[in-house]
Image (cartoon, rainbow, N blue to C red; front, side, top):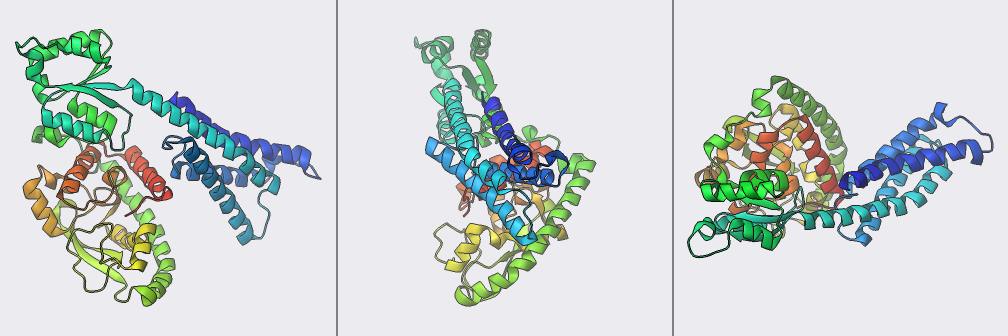
Length: 440
């Protein structure tokens, strides 16, 4: 059903825009014309792509949680599409698309995309009810799993119940695992390392599997449903996997070429933004234009990261930053919300300090502290750090050591899955994050 919802979303936009274009060309226009051989076909395609991107950015069809949000998101996406085409027509001084097509598409697509978004919401809710999890393992692992299931899931699921190994294999007359699965009506059994080491649990899990209950290790469940690796089960041997940037030379070269292209585009945007930031600094953020700080990059080497300064000049920039940090100036907060403070990092990308996608680089002093406390922390430096990354789109901003631990689980997942498709997915998620107002 989820695939059908996405298909409807993808097909509805070109169906409406192209359909209305054909109607205008053959019926509405005073002098009829062949739409498919005119330049308007190209602009109609651009209009379709713009609405596709805008709809994805605002969370359609999968991320809306209420019917009202579905229709509001549809309205925002269509307004962005209409605004983009209107702005292009104003700049070029030509009617690229007829008003009948532009505004007719808007009137039709708002209710259509809203309805598809509402359908997607219902589908997600039903899917969440279908994925009913029974966990066998440690008490701490069960508590952490329950907490993690309230974060952004890749696939919806709910934890119905949990049991320790001793409860299921002891001699206290406790119900067997099969009886517990039947009683809870769970359809997904998750086993941690301790449960996998117990032959009695494994035998009962196999019986449950034969009865239609799916079985996953805790590590695999985290990968498939949460998009990260659980710290509780990380061992050095479990991290011995191919890393794209290290073990696939063609990927590494093509990634660098793509980074340079993105960096050049970012530098052009940076040149446009500098005069406006200078004026803003004069009015409400006096001090140096740029913020410079030493960060740890690929292989543990250090580099100087560049950002537009967002805090009062002379403040201590080496402490963890919070959303309500008093050091952030009003103009600096505007830069942060719009993510314009990150633009100077385009220079870092061109220089090779950063990639477009990768783990975010940390300060040297924090790397030393975190490496002592978090297992295998330095493995994140196997690849070039990024402007954005899987941990950023899944978890957001790290404000303390606990946040750093959570983000490390996502970063290990990225190392394990690094590739062009995953990088593109992260870039798309980042655009969606920005489009939905995400920021720090």
